[in-house]
Length: 445
Image: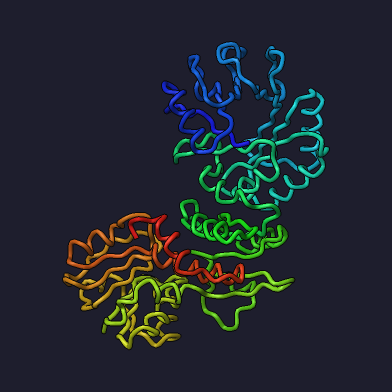
């Protein structure tokens, strides 16, 4: 069952929020004493869970819930006929399996209807620990075993298949615990039974549109698979080894790991890799960025001078894609002198310091910069400016628009390369109806 928690922002209008939650697909509404301690009686269209969290019996007596969620040592009077959840939370770490087994036994000793254990996920090995715990609890006992934090995304995505309750939310900012997945994303995986797992490795990935794109395609083709997020801020080797042990079937790879991932996969001479497929015991690397770029920005075929900003992992794909579209002159502008020299030597392109873009006379400027950088662009009415990032009009695109450029985000490239990734992941080629369905998710594209 899907549980949505009443946020503090809706404390004065709980009935309105509950109606919205029910329409979105929620089946239970949680009232938490530490978030909304002063909720008044209201006519809820959803059964209520009350989690006192320091308010004693007050909310229970006021709201008369169907469920009560009590921490392990929390003592309150439980009305007859109420479903009892006994909880343990560790917001700092995931204890080892032996300690978690003891905690589970302590919860079970209180004879609850449901036990709930939620821990902070610090490494992907912690996900394996929670899986092992889940398997050791008697199958007759309803349970909720949850991870918290950005690395818990897979655990949360799988929650409807494993847990008696799935805690979720509707709108950004209304999450009641770190790492929760929106109910809209859960609904895309409702067809899953024993799904293959795919996901995105990189940093940052929290706001990536990839889960929406891939899970939409998986649902449309009724493929038993789901797509999740694997944030990796540092130590790619350790994280990748843990993910391999989890049996992940395929990966998208984004900044800053498109080059380093090549150390761990078979790749046939690639200089940048954004897709990894597991085939038995082999890990095969591919690059779908080039085809994504060519399909996303076909107008570049009419350009005679193209500037590329940056020296990151996607730049080789952009160079190759541009050469596949047009014989245009290509110049790479960047701040990293070492990487700039490597790119110049490997790809036989002109290179210049980033600040020299002000003097360029390019028909198109492609920004592959991973972070905003103050730039002065040349004025060129009718030229094209592409920022391979997405999520709104960046500072770069704002200045380009003022200087007369036609502007484009990286969202269309993301979508086009994702279609090719999906084919590699599943063996199914998206068609024009899939393309229309995915583009409809992003009206601004």
